[in-house]
Length: 120
Length: 111
Image (cartoon, rainbow over all chains, first blue to last red; front, side):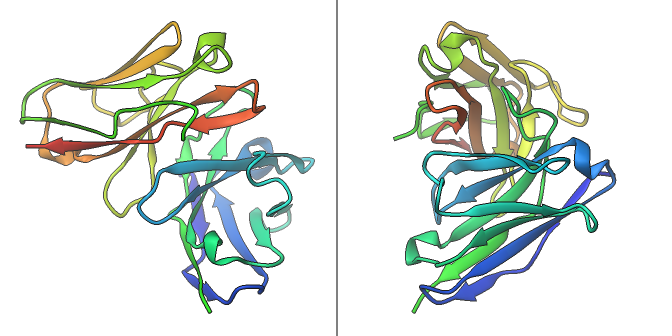
């Protein structure tokens, strides 16, 4: 069974750094893309970008380029979403999800989400 | 403002049929890129509902169907049930943005 498990809620202050994980299991981790989706409170889904674990080929949405960093650890089948300096506007639910292809693809399995709250 | 436009809300009585539209442009749906649909039940993660315009993943009831024509796509739900009350999102690829795009989402209310 394909599973993506994300970590629990995070509460951080503006300016702090954060890395949230997404651990995959039940499938070949390196042969499926992993993407990230933001959902701000009461709002819709936003595509942040996607990474291919086999070679770390990464595509960022123009809206998130330079704002976040994606990475993977193939030894633990874990993908990461990282911020170097959080802002209050980063407060949102963040989902990871798998995709079999990047070009024209879609997300077939989703993690349960990690709620990130940034507040002073 | 989303690249793909969906109605903010739709509603229907149990047993009825509803449709949700997703309107794009020549750089996404109109360029031939596939449309996919997701269902997000309250307080849960989204799940894939329809892929590649009209394909239902295993476990999705055949009451759900998708179609695409020109620069638009539609999700149809027949035999509406209370458990269908959720937010629905369309998604495609946009060549101008070189990335994926979601519709703004449609909240379905079962009366």
